[in-house]
Amino acid sequence: MSPIDHTHDANARSWLASANAAGTDFPIQNLPFSVFRRGGTQEAFRGGVAIGDQVLDLAALAGTGALQGPALQAARAAAQAALNDFFALGPAAWRALRHALFALLKDDAPAQTALVRDCLVPQREAEHTVPARIGDYTDFYTSLDHAVNCTRLMLADGDVTPNFRWLPIAYHGRVSTIGVSGQQFRRPMGQVMPPGAKAPVYQACARMDYELELGIWIGQGNAAGEPIDIAQAEQHIFGICLLNDWSARDIQVWEMAPLGPFLAKNFATTISPWIVTLDALAPYRTAWPRPATDPQPLAYLDSPANREAGAIDIRLEVWLESQRARREGRGPARLSSTSFRHQYWSVAQMVAHHTVGGCVLNPGDLLGSGTISGPGPGEAGAMIELAYGGTRPVPLGDGEERGFLQDGDAVMLRGWCEKPGAARIGFGESRGQLLPARSQAPV
Ligand code: CA
Image (cartoon, rainbow, N blue to C red; front, side, top):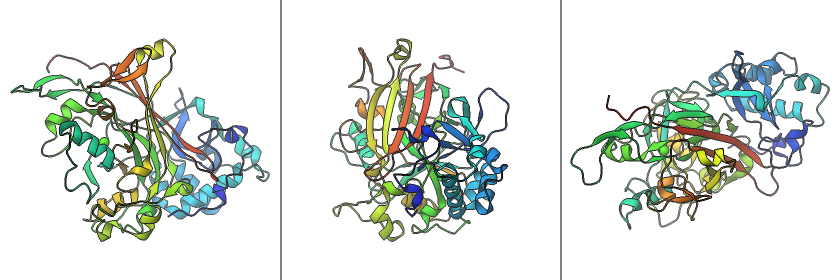
């Protein structure tokens, strides 16, 4: 696991004032990566690192002479329009760049401060794109609370499927419709089986939902037939972003037996532009508990390090901004809040399980964590849980409520980590907006 070092010092400050502002997502202890350019221009997309309210342009920085050795090599790889080559360099290179950037941005940085300042672009002027060429996308289903909530919508005292407590369940998803924050998409059309009907109808999805998830970015991959041992699994993970797995529930329930979700999940997936590295997340690791009354993981899914610190306390929130709230300037309503630390399977277990049969992971592959729901009320990561299948609509304020999403709704995911003795670091935001269906007419 990533070590705690001087870059996690809660007292460290930057010469850039906005990086020291209370509540900023991007203090000097964070240094997350994205791919960006100045909005409204035809500039080349290139890698950048968030610091305060700025983006540090890695392409510009690599040309200044402020970096040397492995950090310069890493910055050149990260200066491209996709971060795959940077991911492929591995943890030593990622760490060399983190340490070098930390030194350049710290308040006691040597003389290059002016050089570095010239490489900053205000975040409000930046536009982002998906930060890597994603070869494969896999979506897991690893929150026990989410799985129990969904099961009980169908069967009041139902339990999860027998495999759930033995393996991290997943399906192979679709890359082509993954978009970065700001994504807009049309309400999907599809086949729906109305209750009691004998034949499905073709219509616009009437039960549109979101799913609060995290995206896990694969760094170095593995060779075919060579599983990644759980003890090494985290060395293959570059970092984590926010991920919204938009879900058409009525299409899903009809199509998913027996092979799993298909069109209900492949029309849009929205990720946050910023990838927070596992190194930055080191202070917020926490024990991965498995109750003694539950099945214990098979050996390939178990390790002392995973038991000790396999979970990560990432605080998460879902917000909804309706068209009316936007028009009236009312602002978004918070729907739920929880933490990733409740997840039944850890990120290391997901990687170990994914590859145990010989499957290849490549740099830039993306794993969805599965919907993240916590154990308490108001901790559900999808509206179908919060609103009990649409039967108990969730209040948004000023008389508005939602059982499922309506056209024009924007959903924002937010995430951050904080604990006594460590800096607060954040993930920024993943925002996506539902547009009306293209057509009600059959095609
Ligand atoms: Ca999902």
